[in-house]
Image 1 (cartoon, rainbow, N blue to C red):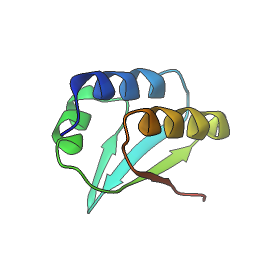
Image 2: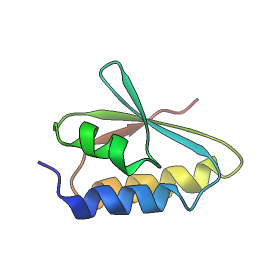
Image 3: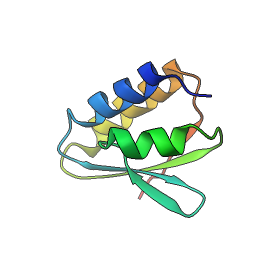
Image 4: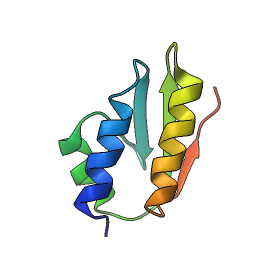
Length: 80
């Protein structure tokens, strides 16, 4: 189970970027900038896909990958 610190840090990191950052889990799409959305999604462990679109997408992908790794969360950044 994911701890609250991970959820808060993931959301805070996402909010530093102008890009759209969306987490896909099964058929659900959650805005990573929404702490409430993360609480309901990250409580179930699994594999997540991260979709990042915008002017600072590359920097956002690197930062998000780092914060997920810090909390041992498996995330697959979709290269589109």
